[in-house]
Image 1 (cartoon, helix red, strand yellow):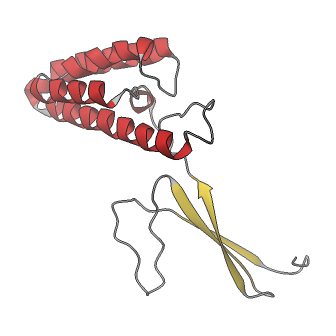
Image 2 (image 1 turned 60 degrees about the vertical axis):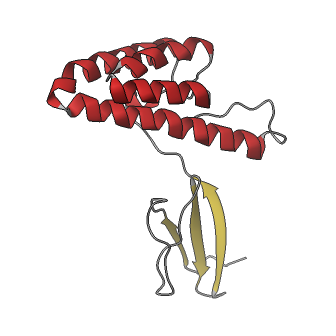
Image 3 (image 1 turned 90 degrees about the vertical axis):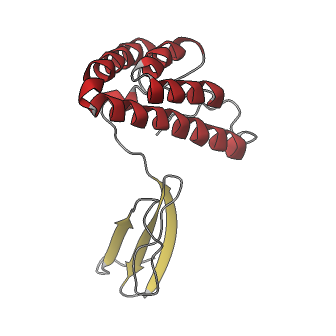
Length: 166
């Protein structure tokens, strides 16, 4: 352990999982699956420790309301959002009551998704709603994939724990 006069430096580095891996030039490590590396160094001991912590992103109201659904339903909603902007989002708003879940309450998620569906449909004539609808559909599939992965990895360890989407 370090004494009171020791200087401790803590550096938290997080990067997008799409960014290239750092090279030998002392760059930050690549972050995957919501994990980040923390480097702790102490001048007296001249050691560096690598600790993995969990990082949770903070999302806005619309993004927090996106439901995590089974992959088959997520794909159907994504396809609807690609070809009929807002329809997949409208269908996904009802999934929070039967087979999907979000970070916020079901009623609030339903209302936010309903509002998003209406806005996507109305603004699709300006192309903005269509692009938003496609990105929303891709988010459905991303959340379903992350949930499936988390369920496989932690299924046996935490069968009673409920996963919350990031």
